[in-house]
Image (tube, rainbow, N blue to C red):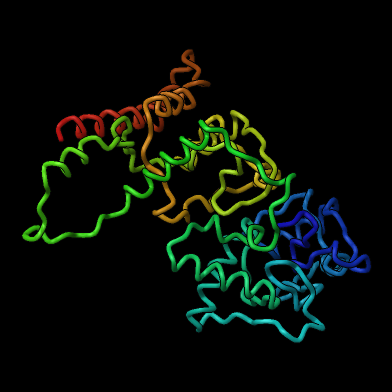
Length: 337
C-alpha cells in the first residue's frame, strides 16, 4: 500500500491536489477511523483524505456512529486508489463468481496489511493485472512473479540489483528444497527399470537436503539479500532487520528470518504480521541447516535472565526447551531412517 493512500476509502491522495491529505494526529478522529476500518491496524503515521477526515471529525463531535463506514470517496479502485467516478471501464467483483473470487484473493495479498472490504471494485488496468496473475498461478508460477509492481513497472538501472554468486547459490538451494517438498508423481513399478549407468548417475547427484533438518512447526523465507523477503513484494529498498524484529517473528509466529535477509521500507513499519499464517504451503520452507538452528536457539535465549527463576521457567517451557526437543526428535527420526 502506498503511504499516500487514505486508510478509510483507499483513494490515492497524490493523484490530485484537490483531494487533500490529513494526518491522524487528532485522537478523536484516529479513534473513529480505527472503528471504521477494524481489524486493520491504524496509527498516527497513516493518512486520510480531506473528505474522510471531515466525516470522522463530524462523527467524533456529534458522538454518534453511523451503521457503516462513511467513505469520502465511494467508487475507488481497491488496488491502485484511482477514483472511478468518471471511469466507464471498471469491474465490480462479486463473491458469487469463481473468477472474481480468485481475483479478490490476489488483491488481498497485494494490498496487505490493508483489508478488502465488502465492496471491491477495480479499474480496468488493475483488473487486467490481477487476471494475468491468476493465469500465472495456474501455470504454477510463484506469487512473487505476479505482483502488481512487477507487472506495471519495468526494471531500471536504479531498481535492478544483481545477486552475488553466494546469494545465487543459496537461492538455488532453497528453490530446490521447495521443489523437493512437493509430492513426486507416482510411477508404475512394473514398467520401470534402471540401468547400471542410471544408478551411478543418480548416486552422484548432490542432495541439498543431506545437511538439513525439517522442523514442521517452523518456517522461513528464501535466504537472499537482493529483495524484501515478504513473498510477492517487489519494492527496491533493502533494510537489515533489527534483532528485536527477528526475535518477535520467531517467538510469536515461528517464522525464522536469516540475519542477512532484507526488508523494504513499507514492511519495516508493518504493525501486524498475522498474514504470515496465510503463506501457501508450497512457498513455505521448513528445512533448516545446523547454523540456522543454532541462530534460532540463540534468538530464543539471548535475553533470558538466568537470575530470575520464574521468567526463566516460562521461557524454557514455552520456547527454548520446546524448540530443542523438536530438533532432537527430528534428528533421531532422521538417523533411524
